[in-house]
Image (cartoon, rainbow, N blue to C red):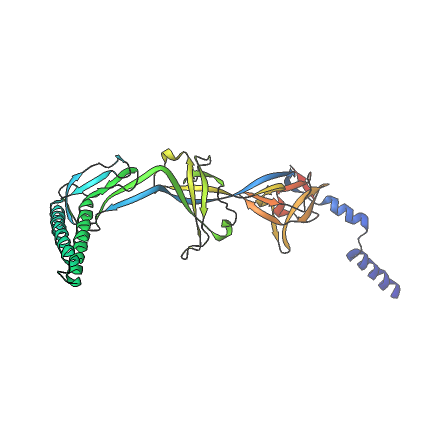
Length: 344
């Protein structure tokens, strides 16, 4: 009875536990391979860009406003015409201001005579110092009044403060204007700039003088259509947006652009040299971190990696891989370390 029990237990142990190396290898060889696709790894360089929208602005823009109240008696240019700096834009009725200037001129002439008489009498001790001082003060006041009247008269003709195009004229002949009313907008588009708000994480990569590629603000536009150069990078962030204002000069292709347009600027963040550039989808997230799989002798080998940057649809890997390795780029989500694989 004891002998039968021992034999029975031996059979159970043999059936449940013990697998010899030959059986293990047989099962390993019978494992169904996972179909994968591979790509041979090689090092290369890749630029890392970031693209942001910006607003086109005229290099110079001026809104001309009146300082006097009056009726417009003449306009000198129509919208779209080129103006030079100092050229006339409109004229106001000057009759009131001319009369004031004439009156000030007459008052000054009288004050000059009164002062000359008072001076002569004072020098001969015929009048007091107070009388002389009053005549001098009256002369100085009359002179100031005349200069003010002439200055007001000069403001009746509004002149362009810059050279540019008359982009907008708000009034016509015969209309009445009050002090502060805008009359015209003049823009100089011979040179243009682009204003871009750059986030904190990227502003450190920008340098003044750097050349930049510019594109129309369309997703399907790939080729650079314009060129620009970084002129100024703000030292302080905008309080509301926490972004930094960057000003660029548009140096090429600006003929098709107009102030107010939105275009994209592509800035170089950094250039990666002598790195592995792999499809971002070939990187697998594991509990222990990011890994990739390479194929060696028909088996998947798991390799931990650190992604330095994601550039478009590519991941940049600087260390951990070897040139010539066959990276699994399809089917990697279905394999584990040591899985049998079959490359297409």
